[in-house]
Image (cartoon, rainbow, N blue to C red; front, side):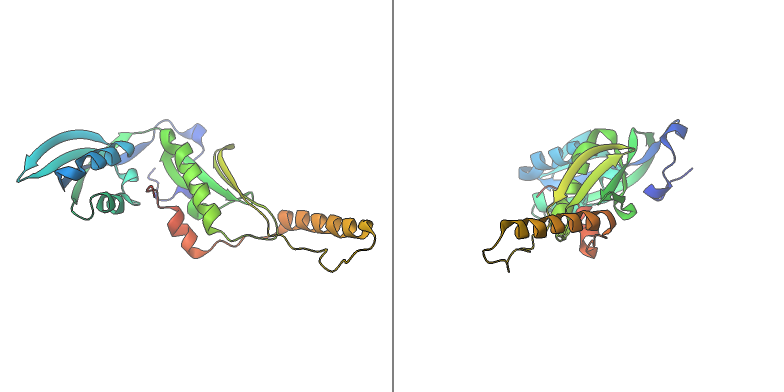
Length: 216
């Protein structure tokens, strides 16, 4: 079967082999940016197939998984080369890969739009990066919001958005300390109910920004 969406990923116990599309990429760049570009390609599981110099510019060839290129590879390439590098590629077929489905859970609920199929070797780093991004992008609520990246039932990364604090004792001036304790206990129970039933609003821009894998 051909997967077009991570939601279609079958039960791992039914998978004998999974292949991913690969590309042949040719990059032209001024020599001063070559080292950073080689590192970028290596970080994206690339295999170098050639390096020559043409008219004072370096021409480097790589074979790369398409999965590592589709999100922000071109933006990262332009950023580290200050816009001077050019990038061209063609598909060269598919190769077997150790791919897994990484799910993102917000307040213990899976967010299908943020699920992705990734190589197992980079899943933990990718999951941590995604959780950190979402922690910055999702506004705080009146209850704690856990953000988790998981493969199957195993959590591989986690961040927590702390709850907004409302001072329920603001109108208590002096008096018996037990009244303040009752108010705080009531607030604690209310937050527990909200955490159990409350919905978390995720801004639309969070979906695009969170999928950007490039380093800041």
